[in-house]
Each structure stands twice: as structure tokens, then as C-alpha cells.
Length: 598
Image (cartoon, one colour):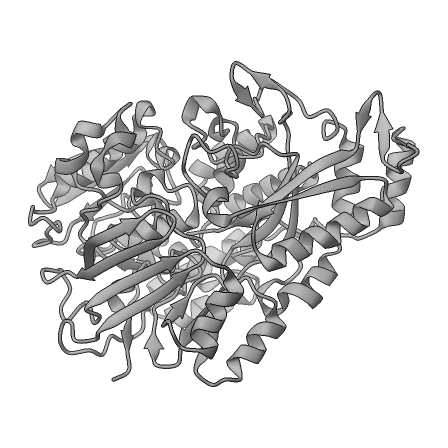
């Protein structure tokens, strides 16, 4: 489809000669998903970005639903969304803190604290792409009774962009300006035309904390705020207790701003354990209502479903299980910092070693024997929406080719069969979180690596430690004090802009930013940076997609990043529970709308 074809179709929608659904179908035929088709219509002024795309909420009164019990086998360690480096900390924060809008399962925007979704029709989107105006819902209260206003929204921008705060959301808010128009209206102003305006205050990056409780902690003392562990939000449930790394307990918010919500009287999110036990606790024994992130062999899940008590939910999105090869040297300390950007990895600085490592991953085996429905083999880092999927990348498993490459590069086998060159041995520490599929994946990779003269020392870190935000913990994935590591990265928007900023040079994780930068592998590439900057201001959707494909090819082609399998959201729920799930946002993005059949 050419640019002229796309504009012609948009014109037909505006004239009423083509339905919105028909437009989406036409674009789906050429690989463009409904989320992006909807966004294009919104930008073009042919349809609002919002659609009532969440399931109908049926309860007719607030409360009375008893207890909702959820298992998160990776537990939250703090409850401030601006410090939520891992998904579990985002999820824990999402119980209490809300965004102006969230991403529904079809990729459309759903208003939460916003009165409406901005569009060209309602005057919220500027025609030149340089600003978006949000009208806030009135009558919303914080859990302590204080009113929610535009001052809170503006404060979150000030808080996140303050370098001394060291917020993980800094990249979302750093290069924009937020202006208070009145007590219930704010305007987000961009430095240039911005095609993806739905980042600040939306989804996992958009949770809003109260100014009156955090304004004294906006800066170097940000980690000292008592409310980091005792949240006061606007959500459907209010704080009762929190044991970091273990349990969150909350109760119904009687003053919640949505009618007849929430349904449940209490909420418990239990952390710890493992994914298999969590699956059994819902699908087999029904001790819990919902189990998050069931990274369990598909054969086991199918057997558990046979009990007839629960079901497995597979929600497509942009999640990815992948391997990182450290750019820096984790064994050298520079000014008290390991994996310093001033160092270079002694082995992975050789492209031949990285290429060999990529060839030693049998993705077909991972899909067929470990992940099944929950992990299709992929060659790209950016896999969804399909419009942004590169046709240029291919994955290959070949121990023979890996050996040939290493031989040609001068990496010779020693008596112990481990290759070496100039005193550097191909012996690497390979870390990931404790999780059965991940340990099985490590074993598959170790076996192949041995056949190529590479020794992998396998390290498994308890999930609550590996994904912790504790800056003093040496085993967190953000520090990356290993040679190789593996985990899942999520894509919390139906647009790749935030997802792909994980490899820009200004997001490098380091001691200077309390290891809060999103570029954990610490890869730097000037062409990538330039393509990302260009995409930020490119309003033409076709040209913009080409830029993101270029970024994918650069980072995957470096072989510092090795995609393994796509990770749709896999969870388990009782047959009577009605969770509102989305592959483009947190699991608990709309926890206020969850209910159970009577």
C-alpha cells in the first residue's frame, strides 16, 4: 500500500464512504493491526482515538464480591510507579495509581482519569502535532480525601524529569513541557511534531502520584518518601498493607470515581513461589482467582486445564523473551562501578563471538518443547504490530557454522575444549531469574555452546531479587553484572516508540542514574540514535514504520541482542472470573472492572 493509497482510504472514511471497520480490515490485509489503524484515523481526524473496546461491566452495585485473590509469583518490592523498573513493580503500583488513559486489548485508548480521549474533533490534538490537551475527570479524590487536580498532573512531569529523582519514567517526560490550563485541564507541549503523543500520562508510564505527599521528595531524597511503600492513589482499591517481596493487601475504595466499582471488597496479591505452583493454585485447586505470567511448559498448562476449574488466557502483544550479551566488562571495577560504560567486554567485543552465540540458540526447540502456545520463535526484537516487523531478519541454528566462524576468527580450543584467544577464554556467566522454562532454555543453550567450545556457567537468581529495584542489590538485571542474561521485555503500548528507546545511548543504565536507565545491555550506535530521533518527529506513518524497522535491524544485527520467542501474555483464571486483560498494558490496568459471576 502506497502513501497515496493510505490517504485515499482515510479520505473515504472522513466522507462516510468507508466504515471505520472497513478501514481497519483493509489495513490488516497489508499487515497493519487494528491499534495502529485506529491511531492513524485519530491523527488524521477521521475518528477519535478512543473506542469503547473493553468488555461490558455488569455488576449493579459497589462491593459485595468478597475477596479477590491474585498470585504474582514475582513479587513487587516497591509501590512508586516512577521507580518501577520491573513489570511486577508496575503491577503493584497499578493497584493504587491510575493513568489518564490505558491501552485496551485492541490497542485503542480507554479513558480512566481523563474525561475523554483527545482527538482532532474535540480539539485535544493540535493539527501540527505539537501539543495534546487533556481534560481531567472532575470529582476524583485521592485515598486520603484530597482532590485530584491538574496540579497533580503537572507535578508528575516535574518529578519524573528531575535528574536528582532518578525516575525510570524520565525518558517519557524529559523532552516535553506540561502546562496547567485550568484546574481540570492540562496541555502537553512537544518540541517537534510528535506522531505518538499517547505516552506521557498513559499506560504503565502514566500512573499519577499525589503532589501533596511527594512534593517534599522531589529530588535526591526521592527514595525516602514513606509513600513509596504506603501508596495513596485514586484507584478502586486503597492500601491496607504491603510486605515487599511478598504480599499486597488492599480494600474497596468507597469513594471511587466510577459507578458500581469495584466489585470486590478486598484484594490480595500474593508474591513469591514459582509459575507452575501458581498455575496449579488456580487451574487445579482453585485456591486463587487469577495467576499472572504463567511461564510454564504448555503441556503442563493443558493438563491443568483438564480439571475444568479454570482457563489459560493467551493475550497477544509485543512481549519478547531474549538474551543480552554484555557490551561492557562485568569483571572490572571503575570508580566503584562494574559493567561500566568505560569498559569493553573482552570476548563480545569480537563480532565473531556474538555471531556464534546467536547461531547456538535452537529457537524451534524452545517453541516446540518448552513454550508452545506461549512462545513462538522469532527473529526480530520488534514483532508487533505487524506493520513494524522487519522482513530482513532470519534466525538460524547451526553448531557447525558457529564452529567455523570461531575457527576463522582465531578462537582455538584448549585441552579442556574451551576456546581462547590472546588470553581471553570463552567462559561466560549466564544469568536469569528462577523459572522452569528459563532454566530449561539455559540448559539447551549450554549444551549447544559446549559443542562449539564455549562454556556457560548457569546462574539462577530468585525473581524477587533479579527484578528488584534495590540499588544496593548486585544481582538485579538492571546492573547486569554477568556476561549473558535472559528475561522478558514487555511492550506496554501499541506503538514501538517507548519500547525501542531501550537502546538509545541516553538511556544507558549506570551508577550515575541509579541503574534506572532502560538501556541495560549498554549498547551504543549513532545510526540507531539518529533513526530514533527521526521517528519521534515523523508524522508520515509509512516513513515512521521504516525507521523502526531500521532500528530493529541495527540492534538485532549487532548480535548483542538475541531474540528467542515472542511472549504473549499468558495467565490463568477461574472460569467464573471476568478479568479485563490487554497485551498492550499492565495486567491490572483496569482492575476496577474485574468481577466474578454470582
